[in-house]
Length: 97
Image 1 (cartoon, rainbow, N blue to C red):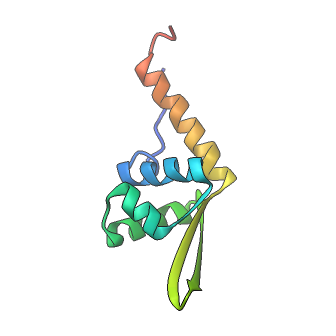
Image 2 (image 1 turned 135 degrees about the vertical axis):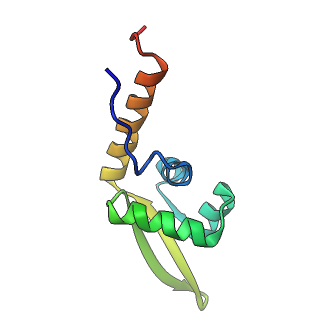
Image 3 (image 1 turned 180 degrees about the vertical axis):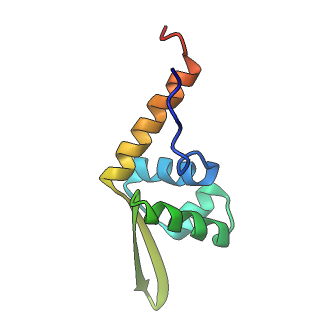
């Protein structure tokens, strides 16, 4: 009856990152850090986990001699997010009403 929730997206910070990227398609690390109110270290670890499962793509470059990290949502990430949301809806409405 209840669908299994994606353990990657079931983390609050990873879900927040994917939710933000769904709405903006791509974002700088500093934007994600500010919006999620997380530490740089924790955000970095969670971004790497999302990258490992190919939910996001990460590009590292330099802008005005400063390192810049840009994260982009992938098609796989969008699909995983939509599946996760549908599964959650099943928990909120178990009788399908």
